[in-house]
Each structure stands twice: as structure tokens, then as C-alpha cells.
View 1 (cartoon, rainbow, N blue to C red):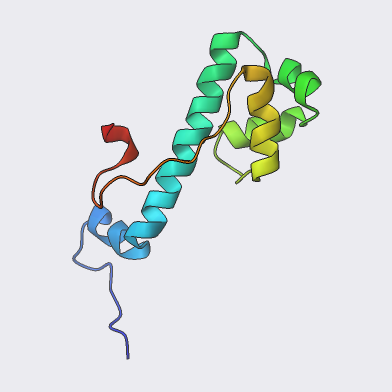
View 2: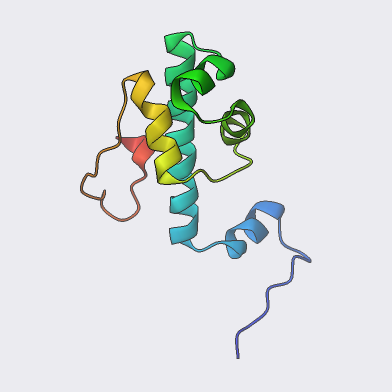
Length: 104
């Protein structure tokens, strides 16, 4: 039987830590990093969301919701958006346990 965690008497940050596993938190961090990089690249390129829609075929509302982190875009959508921004994804060796991507 698993022990239930009660939020009573715990700080909000301590309670949040119990909601997700370290692996789930890492997955969220990676997704946020990718979406942030896409937003930064779009801004640097000077494209509006509507212009990016024309270049990619990905609808502007989808781009908007992705940038607001309201949806979890699929890999094909990410790749369509990265292409006109002159970006791509690469697979690299994982960092040692406990080291986040932001520490590199």
C-alpha cells in the first residue's frame, strides 16, 4: 500500500515535488527548453506567428498555444517550425544524473 501525501502542513513547493517524478520534471524541462528556443529563434528571425504559419503550414493558433506552453506539439510539428528558422534537433548523450540541460 502506498503512503498518501497530504498538502496540510507542507509548503506549496514541497507538495509540488511530490506530484511529479524526477523523470517527469526533466521531460517538462526539456520541452520548455525546446519551445523557448523556437520562440527565441522566431523572434530573432523577425517572423510573426502568422508569417511562420505561411512558411510552415502550421496554423497560427497552434503556434500561439505552443509558445504559451498550452499544448504539447508533436515532433513533426516541431520539425516543420524549425526548418524555416534554420534550426534542427539533434540527439546527444545525456548529462550525468542530477545535471540539468541549463547547466551546460
